[in-house]
Image (cartoon, rainbow, N blue to C red; front, side, top):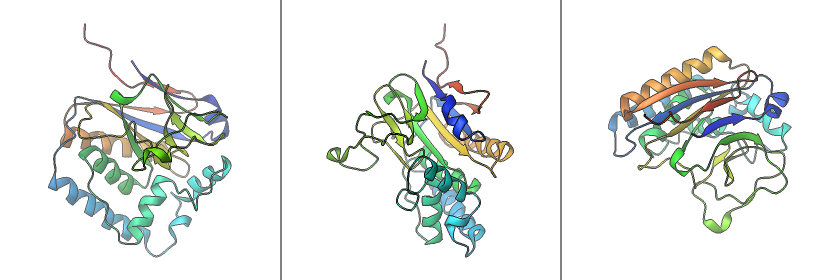
Length: 243
C-alpha cells in the first residue's frame, strides 16, 4: 500500500501549509462528458468575474505561492504555480482544453476555490510518494507534454513530489511528470489540493469536499479524504486488500 508522506522539513519551512488529499479507486476516467465541459466553462467565467481587473500576481490566493517559490529558489515569473497559470489563462480569456474527467474536475475545483490542484495515477507510481526538498542528484524527469529528450533533473532545494523512481511534480505544483499523469486508463490514484495562508483549513476542506463529490458523481468509484499538516504528515493512498 502506497503512502503519501510530507517531510518534516517542509513544515519547518512552511509551517502553515496544508495538503489535502482525495484518494480514489475504481473510477471511470474515459469518454467525453458535455456536463463537465459546461462546468469548466462556468468555473472559468466565474473566476474571471472574481479576478476583476487586478493583476493576477497580486491576488491573495496567488501571491503566497509566488513567495513560497522564491523561498526555494524558483522564479515565479518563469515558473508560475498551477493556480497562477490557470488564472492567467482565465484573465486572458483562454478556455481550458477538456482533457479527461478527472483532470477537468480538478481544474474546475482549482478555479472554483482558487487553490492548486493536481493528480497522479497510482498504477504508475513506484512505492511511497514524498513531498520533500530535492537533493543534489535527482534523476532526470520528463515533464507533461514534453519530448523524452527534454528530461532534466529537479534543482537541489526545490520542493517536489517524488516516488522511488523520481519526481512526479516539479517546483511543488508547477508542472507534473509525464510518467504518472492521469489518463483514460486511470482507475486509482490521488488528487492533491494545497493551501497556504490566507487560505486555511475551512476553505481547504470545502474544496476537498467539492472535489470528492464531483469525482463520485462523474467518475464513480470510491473516494477518501485526508488533510496533511505538521501534526499529521502521512496518508495511505490505497485501501488494504480485501480478505
